[in-house]
Image (cartoon, rainbow, N blue to C red; front, top):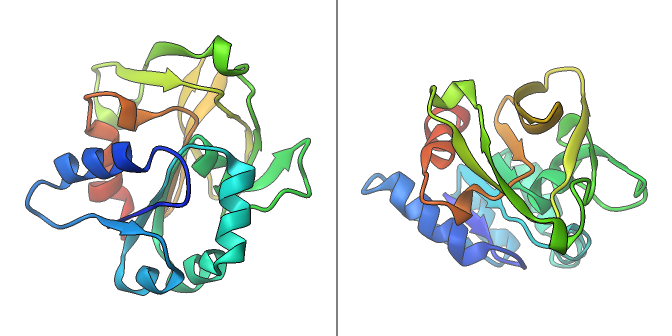
Length: 188
């Protein structure tokens, strides 16, 4: 299990994954393309999607991700980087791995950040604490992508096979259910 460490909520995801994994494995902080060959799964954390994408390309991490056929959990900016289409930013780099379109900062800028309880049926009946910071929204899904959760009628969590994308920051909560779901249900 690895966490991409180019920019964003790296340490928070490392800590969350360590707690979710327990003694079942280790978490690798990924800074180089060659590290990906050893992994089965990768988290692409929140941060600034343009910056992360440019750094992925500069260091060849984009190609290494595609060649490694990893299970990937993208949160916030990571979800943007998984999308086939970035609305209004069609020229921006993305891995184009999920049949979905996203709109960056759709819930507002930094000052409009908020928390909301989310109903995520795959995690059980207990609401999940969603932390939205300059959050994107998944505007459309098609093909093999499926919606797992919405907030006020807007898609905030989707899955397509070995890929999981969410608009919010699960690593900033004490709730590890979404990280465990990724490890137990998405990682192939």
